[in-house]
Image (cartoon, rainbow over all chains, first blue to last red; front, side, top):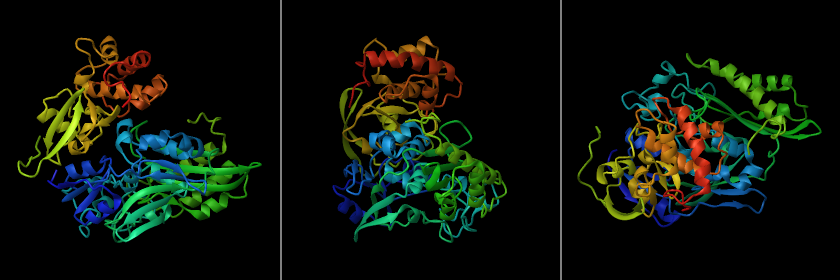
Length: 333
Length: 175
């Protein structure tokens, strides 16, 4: 690692006052320490936020839940309120990483983890995300794991999180605090598409810290599915993942949410597809139509064309699982 | 290690407990917990495999929870209670998980074994069912290149109920 100075502020306001372009906040460190070992990220100052509280899961007055940014991924997945009312989130978290990493990784940090694009990690190659303007070797190189939706000439990287795919489907809200105060960012707006500035993964300003994630009142505790397709049965990033959630009344879909992971620079939603499902009885034909519509704008690269078919089939299967009772398909919890 | 460790730079004091022993240490901010254990404290039971959080060979217990020491900065362990493979036995009395690994011949070269055992001890506190499917999923953060997996699953399956029946061994206490 490139040497850096270490700071341990006593409050959120002290932490955000310390932040500048040469600094990074650190919590779980599971991604940042690795990036620092590889010299991909070289902060001059590290601001340790692990002692700032922000580690509670609380009910909100509107019937939702406020999750402190420092709640670990393991604690969040196993929390009884989350398991009972937001089981899609538990299922997604438990599909990601390993037990050791989930014990370390924080809720806020999960949002801020960076792509696992090989070229981004390899400082011997160009990369527009790591070194803006240097080029994107992934576009014509090894791009099996890369994006099929929403990519740009500058960048074809994907966001690696499972948790964020569920948070997108649940329409979470990100609470952030900076030097000029607090603000809330809708989950759909938090992460960016690469466009011509792939070095910017999200909307946070340099001095802004994620302090909490808010979940709206629960609506999908009965019919949900996080389906993850990967190269091995456990402990691998998604090639394609689907967070599907529906609300059924008399076998008619009243509400539907669908988010894809592993296919874009951010969790991918298409509100038109979700609207297609509303008012319809669940059927294989309906789900197939939805899946085809969701992928119709896909622009696969030389090695990831398989992801289009894989995503379509995964959407049909995830929706089919979701409309079953969770108990009927043997879901945990 | 190909890494160049700068000798200069400010060291910071940390106080922590390692294998039930209180320690006051000076560390550079960039020293990982894994390097602290192995290079400064000579606790070389904890292994460096990938050094990137992918293999689990460096698994230790922090406040009772299993973590990857390679992705943990030592400076961020100020005040922590750490248990490594060296801290699991009580004198000559092996930890039940260690005994089960021997009984089931749950290793070949042994390099991943300290991490596997610490991970399994952490697993025991997480309250999962002790079925082979659950154990395989919950031990997926520990790779074994020799492929001793079937015997590792058998060892963990045998030791989990023993640990729950008598959770007095080091590393099993609630934090």
